[in-house]
Image (cartoon, rainbow, N blue to C red):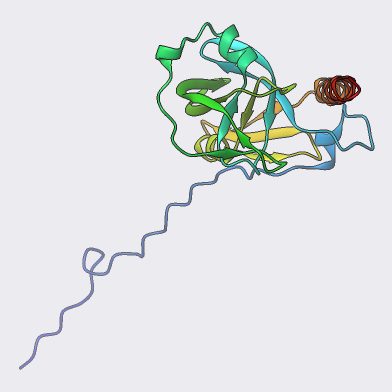
Length: 194
């Protein structure tokens, strides 16, 4: 004689549903361009809070492998040589020249409530920008950016936050580069004529 066991609720549980967490998608829409002068080809230049100070003229550049700080910001933050640590790798500029650097420093960079520690290489070179934040900063923040929309978007507590670039600041930086180049060329040609 065999005994068959009838299924009960306990012995045949319902399949559990997978827990689905819905996260907002980081994307850019046509509305993101509102407020920009079209057409344009401006760099993405923002203001960030670095070491507790609001720092203007920071370039967001995904193509850069390291974050850069220029002398104006280094001096403006009252940093000293003893604050720097050694940086042993050579840096090469876009024109292929080796860039002289003073060392590196780790500083907090804040956007709204999000804070990311960033290793800046302090370089001794002219730039209309005070600093450049690059891939490391973007990845640590979990951000995406669009030069077309002049915005950086990132998630903060499951909400999409955005950092808006300044088109006028980007254009001022471009004019500063052109004027600096003209001064350098004028100085070089004056020296060559002697």
